[in-house]
Amino acid sequence: MELGLKMEIHGESIDELIRASLCLLFSQGKENTPTKGKNLELTGVLLTLSNPLNRISRTETKNTLFSCLGELFWYLSGSDNVDHMIYYLSNYSRYAESDGTVGGAYGPRLLGTHNSVNQLENVISILEQKPSSRQAVIQIFDKYDLVNRKNDIPCTQTLQFILRDNLLELIVTMRSNDVFRGLPHDIFCFTMLQELVAKELSVRFGKEICLGNYKHFVGSFHVYEEDFEHVESYQQEGYPSIQPIMTSMPLESYRLLNGVVKMEKKIRESQQSGAFESEFPNYWSDLTMLLLIFNTYKQNSTNSLLRIKQLMANLTNKGYKPVVQKLLDKLGNKNDK
Image (cartoon, rainbow, N blue to C red; front, side):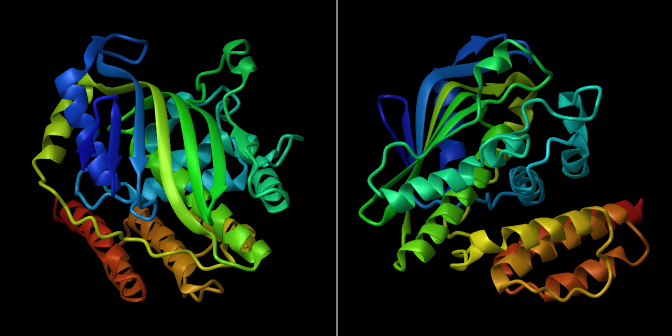
């Protein structure tokens, strides 16, 4: 872990980045009181994650895997319906318009579901045709976001994919970023997109394209005063392992997305609750299994504990088990009351 003198933070894991960011904010941040409340802020901060696979926190406080997965699949579905995210984060309703949509939703902007360009496919095509291109850019923030104001304005401005020496680097620019709440979700989702693009390019080139650095540049980098107590709890947990929980995606991942997104929808709408036989490789089978575990947890029925234990036993990546155990502990505490 390294703190630079020019507001640069380098880390091998998401936990290293969060801890270093909080340290920098509490030592050098200045008080600011924007619309959403008092915070400590730094401007013009660059984060670099050297291992994009290390995108999940190993701490009790910031292990937000289920809501991170929910947000990723919301993006990949191309939907702007708030009900999708309320299922994973109940307070997400505050961002919705009266018609139940979220004006700043990333999915339609990424995939062009509202008669626009599929920007994700576009950057893959650009790099396939010209690997040295500097034009493989996805635009999220739009000038009209400041004219036709909605309850939610995108914090992300652009994602630029750069391919050099068989390494795919992703550079994300943010106008604003909450270190404690928003950053873990953003890094998870964007590094997953980075890996999806790298795998698809590997297929199209017939050779392996590896993950390069993930870089995250933020205009307003902050932590809210209302989260200071939670930040203290997080810091008291000590330094977790920097060994990634997630393994590398299978090569065909980009081409499996439609099926995985449909499975997430079935699980979320409780159409998939019985015997689970996945059609996907172990990597994606585990992620859909985690979604089913979360659905079972939310149902909180008399057999939820047993069902979750059965599902957990089928996970091929044992690194997910501590995350599931946390749900089991919560469910046990609920049932004891």
